[in-house]
Length: 124
Image (cartoon, rainbow, N blue to C red):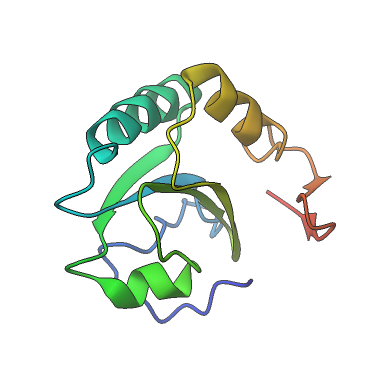
């Protein structure tokens, strides 16, 4: 699950001043999704609290970006950083506490190295 670097620049995670990609919380939605407004609200609040970039992608309008992140259902919340990403929640709305804990276990916010749930190493 690496970042292929060939996405729509509007949805690519922003690159920091030292060349690293700033951690970005991405919420994938659809127009008819009844739980998406709450997912966006929770994700935006947690992203703001943790100093993450925040993006929303409507998969009806941009299915290619959704597929690049292995997302086919909504709402889905993805944490993207450097050349990697992890789908944190699929088809569910986490509480603020659950989302915060899921993000912090990746340790991309604090600048330390950790591993994803699938065992791959991640470096901020």
